[in-house]
Amino acid sequence: MRLPGKTPNHTQGLLHPRNVHRAPYDFVRLVGACPGLREHIRPHPVSGETIDFANPSAVRELNRALLKLHYGIGHWEIPDGYLCPPIPSRADALHAVADLLADGGEIPRGPTVRVLDIGTGANCVYPLLGTQLYGWSFVGTEIDPVAVAAARRNVTANPGLADRIEIRRQTSAGSIFAHVAAPGETFALSLCNPPFHASAAEAAEGSLRKLRNLGGERKVARPALNFGGRSHELWCEGGELAFVRRMITESAAQAGLCTWFTTLVSKRGNLPAIERALAKARPTDFRILPLFAGQKQSRIAAWTFRGRADPLGRPR
Image (cartoon, rainbow, N blue to C red; front, side):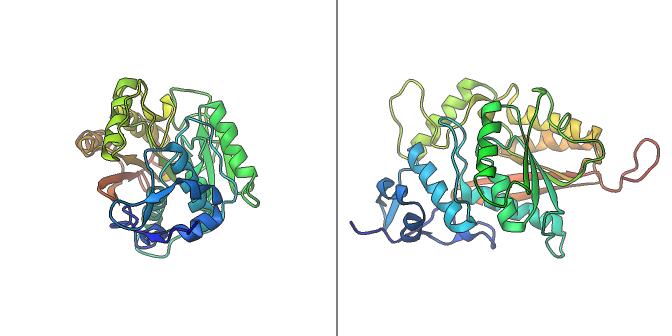
């Protein structure tokens, strides 16, 4: 069987200049890194080869190959049905927040840069990528005990990561920043990919819509999203907007926890309400960092209370 060659990567168009995934997928090298990917490769309708992005198994094998080839992550497993994130866009988000921390200067690197990953998931993808890209250290939080156990396995199975990544169980389902940090513990940055949808029905419709866009709509009672996801990963009451509003309120109450608080905002229409919530929280700076992946545009909202005095007049 002939190994497939380089194929156009349709996420590459507007990715960050430092993102290795701007280059076409090199399936020869990817199959070399992860032989299990071979069975999922098929001819691309325009040119070269691709995979079936509507097939969760194919996406999972592609992720394993990308993580191993480009980031040296030799072990990566997630339980069936848990979120399988797109590696190129997650790497892009990390490059964007690295520029935020640099603030026009040198990007801070090394384990002294501590990052808090809210809802790290079974995939633990931000900590795995961030340690390899910039040498940062991470605390990942998660409410699901199955995801906590899986994330910890992904850390300990890869040599050298156990002293850079700690996974903590969030014991309070209604909290985001509370109950996860030790007294006096601080972080340079927090990351979060909040649940996008407001209900299970909305999440299911989103799954169908993605399958249609991928040309893979199937007549099934419960459509499987190509990137998977458990209920708490996909939806919460009030959806993305309610979650981010709660995050802003909690960040103001713990303004010194992180230098920068950040979250992905998938829906552009949520930005005006998020900006109003931030106006009430009174950060000293607020920025929108654009992200692109293929035909989809997203963005990161980032805010900081750095330099604002606390109620006793002490600078933060």
